[in-house]
Length: 395
Image (cartoon, rainbow, N blue to C red; front, side, top):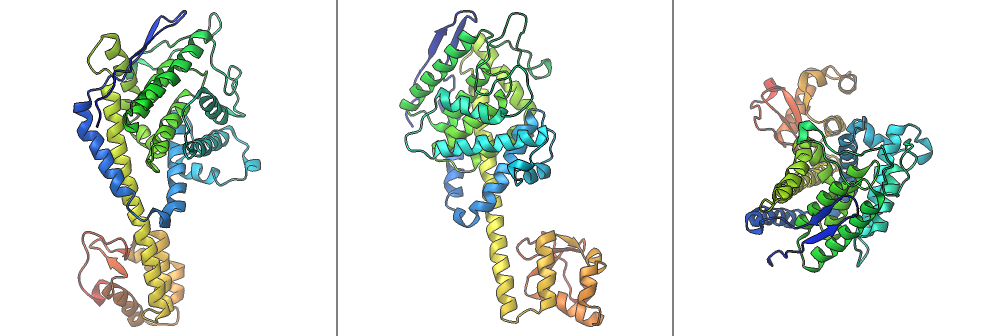
């Protein structure tokens, strides 16, 4: 890897005072975390993503929208978020639903941009993302896509004492507009000097949040900008999945913005190192999770195919096929609970216990299902750690 350029950009604003964009990391110290991200992504993209793309995409989007929305006070659960994203736009009435749908619209816009050859970050893109995120949301101060310009007597603060203190970003609209233009100029410098996207993206995220250009929606916009830069650089699924990682580590996420800002004020060496390292660890964790999820989805698809083939070849009967289909939908199921379920009892209403035992034991023998030591039945693609031994007595 090339040594990181200085690319320092000092800006004299009209009212906010001096503002400095700097890389501010120790590349040698980040070499191993960066390589771990590259290695994890290299393995991930070798998996059969085409087979699982549709399902993985839906899961990542729902989880990400839930994550980024919850960080900013959204109240929908992850399950509710997933359902809202499937609604017809005309059915979206509530503000909480609108927040989720808006984020999805911003993601769609970002992914389209990232897939466009030659795309580069610019102010029009940032304004468009903000317009998507804030569309039809009730806020008297906010105009979608329009930068903040605080009137006299109205002060914007960011952060709180629990996460390193409150910070007062630029208030004057002229300073906000100037710094946002310089952010784009600085990003172009990073891009031209081939600063790796997993370092470049969190730096842009950090400085964007430091400027805090809009009245509301800045966190959501900042995470979309970061994700788009990563997506444009060839990273798949992980960029938008990072929103859930930030939610899972929300206290550290919020605190690090203040940590890096204070490091720079004290002229510390590599002031932005903590946030970039945090981001790299998040990328590694997220990519591994996606890889595991991808493998699991592929495993389920192969299992479904295997079960269907076994049924077509008459290696299992219709009752056994139904049992496996139910386990596939429900996941691990308590054996006694299954025995008392109406659907299971209806299978054997005219048959004796011997047939019931024989059906289950046969499925265990050919490993289309497993029984663990807690009497939980598992579908064959999810082998439990402690498989219960024994035949008819165990089932």
